Length: 285
Image (cartoon, rainbow, N blue to C red; front, side, top):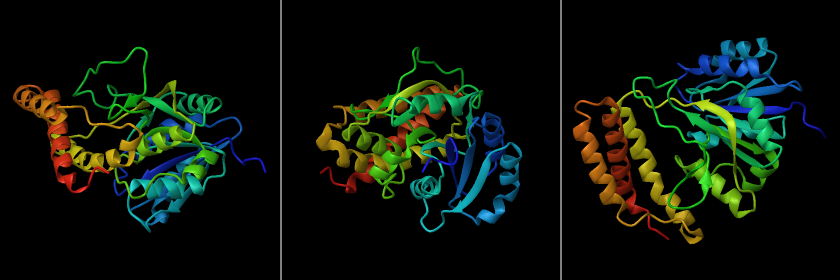
């Protein structure tokens, strides 16, 4: 049976909806000619609260639905419940606090014509003007981690439904790094991710150094588990990394007395180290 719509866009939602209207305002004008749906996956509240946003989506010609993802908290369960409720074979993931660039939907769909898994390009200047300008990669490329395989963050990720089904979606045991894990597991099955170089997503960084630190701690904690799961496939912590990261954090902390951007960098680096140390109870299998 052919899919009812050309593409399904899944947006997981936590308690903060302050930026959702901006994301939808960017998405709605990009409705594909063959139709599309936007799925709001509610992980922290009753989906009935989303009626105003669903109306905003439907007025733009999209199908829209809100699904209840409160049974298990976390972004992975929310994304899994969202894509499993989708009516298309092509699934795009983005987040509520970012803003997709012009033609993001079409560029991601184009990428999925040639690959089962694609990632977009993150642009930082537009939503973080107080911290920019940021250096840009030319040409853009996918990120890597632990000296291992490329990946794309789940805020700018597209996949064929068949691949998501084969992978059983995002690993719900991981609260961070689940997107990296999914991309790597796909590569092991013969489906390496490719970059959609014109699919730009305007990414919003945390608004304060404190928020940046706490985010980095959360990622650092999960890094150890992520490494344990993929060590046998070649993932490695670079020799001397904690010391180098600590020294860089100290330098940026000093620079941060007069430079807001350096202060945020120090918060991220220090948070990563703290999270890694807190996660040491996870053995490296």
